[in-house]
Every structure is written in C-alpha cells, then in structure tokens.
Length: 362
Image (cartoon, rainbow, N blue to C red; front, side, top):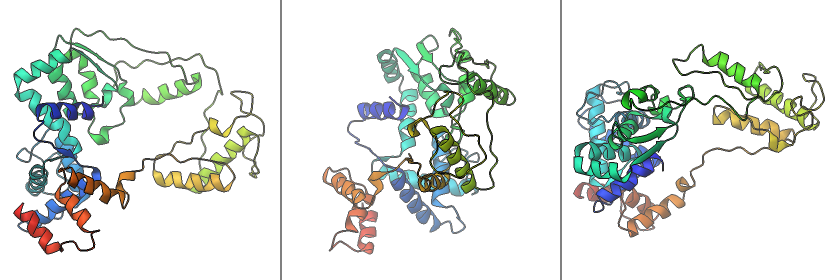
C-alpha cells in the first residue's frame, strides 16, 4: 500500500464511528477560499490567495505542525499569525463536516500511533515485517510513521537511491535516507551497481553529472555492459517549436523517413540497433504540460502519430462532479460543498442567503 492508503485503512479501523470523507484537491481549494473569506471579516489586512494557503497548509501538515505551532517556516508571504488564523479556520471547516484532506491521513495516523502506546504496540506486532520502497522520497510525516511502527531492533528493509530524490517540492527529505543506519544501527547495507537498461555511455555521463553535486556517501558508478552510441547528442533550439521540429527530424531518420525536409542528420538507421525503429519505440520526455502540447502539435502535423499522457481528473468534470456529490448526500456523507454543488443544478433550489444561513446553523 501507499503511505496514504495504509493510514486511511488504519484510521478507519481505529475510528469506525467517525466516518470521515477524504476530499479532493478541488474541494480543498474551495474550503481554503472559504476559510480566507471568513478570516478576512476580522483580519482586513489578509492578502493570502487560496492556492498559496493550500500549499502552505500542505507543508505544515507534512511537518506535523498545528495552527498553534510556530508556522514561520511555511507562512506563504503572510504574517505567521494571519496564516495561522486561516489554517485554524480551514481545519475547523474540515472537522465540523467530518472531512479529511490528503495530508490529514498521515497527520492523524502519526498522532494516534505516537500518543496511544498500547495501540502502537498492537500494530507493531501486526506488521512485524516492514518493507519500504523509494525511501529517499520520505517526508517528515511518513518518516514518523516508520519510526512508530518499527522499533530499533525491528525487522525492516528499505530500498532507495538518494540521488533520485525528486519530491523535495512535496516535502520529501533525503536526510531520512542517510539517517537510516543511525536509526537502525544493526542494519546491513547492500549496494546495487548493475544497471539492466541503460548504455554505458549514459551511465558514464550521469555519473559525471551527479558526482559534482551529490552529498551521497554511497555513490558508486553503475555498469551495464550494454554498448551503444558513444556520444549523447545535445541540440540547442531557438524556440519550443524548433525544438519539437528537431525531435521530429530525429524520429523520422530513425524510422526511415516520413517527408520531413532536413539536413541536420545523416540518413540511415539507428546506430545502436543497426535497424529502423517503429514509432512505438520512442518516448519524448518534457517538463511541463505546455511543452507537451507543442510537441503533439508539431509531431502530429508532420504525420508522426503520438499520444500525450498526462493526469486527467474525470471526477472533476461538469456533471460527474454533481452526480458524485448527490451520491454522497444520499449515502449520508455529504459536506456543505456537496449540498451547494447539487443545489446549483436543481431547478428550484434554495438561494445563496438561505444556504449560508443553513451552513451557519449547522
């Protein structure tokens, strides 16, 4: 299970009567905006935006900070006192509606395990063997879950690579990876150095790049025994579109030609495999969705079939969102947001003033 799935299961076991519902990112943003509006009524100098508030609340919960703690490290360009007021109001709106946001799952599980010794011991015995993948991507809350469940002499195995830590923006900290042998001094360390999918050229280049910036004491150069092109080609393009065109020309050369007019590459099959490739052999990696749109437009216009893969939230679509809210209301798990959403599509619903009065009364 993921950390969040595990904690959700644990919370349902220990609090079956509470019946909390986990909200999505859209509802979280809406609740943050409502919290800001409420706080502004007595804090007129508040200038916090909902998206900034959500980001700061996420960081606070990942660090296991409550509104009464010192929030200076996470306050988003706002005074800590003002942010604390918004955070407290946001949490109040969650609590009165029996809601959890995503970060609450780990936050509440840590609070429970660290405050209830008999229950912690029960779960330690229940999960006597613990395995954690991608250990370099742990954040503080996830680290505390592991420490609560695994005693110093516990049976725990983790795997990870501190040079592949890419979720710092989500609160992960590679320091927990480096602390593992301190937390569990009896642990054995096994270094894996053989790569099974990259060429020697790529491994050598990545090692040269990583070793200049890494603080990893375990860094070892990997080997694969896979031969290939002796050089990594770097293309400097004038714009995003010209970059996409250059990629298209490369793909055309390697599949045997499609009609691109180019003179930047020699014709002939791919040097690695000595044969032409199929379109399904290629993947274009990019950083932002906007870049993906440019690639799709240019490649598609040149007759190169491509499929853009990206996250899409079908549950957030108009109609589906209201239907889900209606189902939650029928199930007895609807929040104020669900009532407002359904009321907006009912032909003879109640007006905004009455809806606000209902919320205040509740």
